[in-house]
Length: 148
Image (tube, rainbow, N blue to C red; front, top):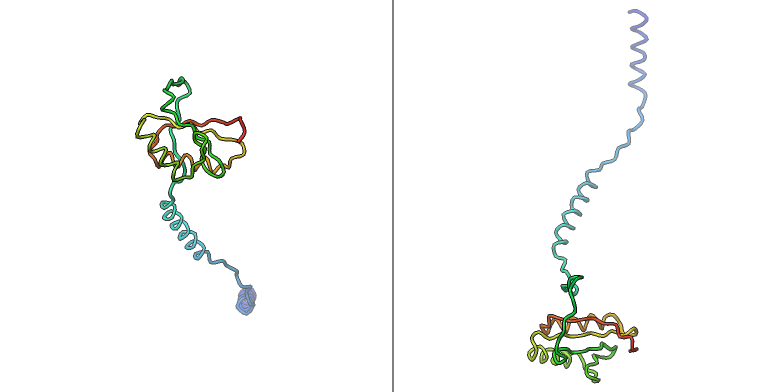
């Protein structure tokens, strides 16, 4: 054997005997599976989200004012303890009955909601909910600068 072959053989034995450092690896299949399952979960549960809120159609910017008979208009001031209509504070049940009675008398009637600064927001939402439940289609919102 020549010298090169001997050197080559010695080097090969050395490589075989030398412990190689362990290669570190990261198995990412479980993370991919988990992200895929989360994606499916959010797609499926996203279809069950129910839109909540009060949806209304607003008039166009160029719409003019409309003249209406005063009898067709009901003015309401939501209060923290009820609804103020014609200087009488009504609870939700009586207020709804009054709005339904007004709607039967004037199908194209309007409810004007006057909000004061001290009234909580949920009272406005409750007022509009009653209007919607009673079938009233038209209402107007006004700021009550008088106080309450």
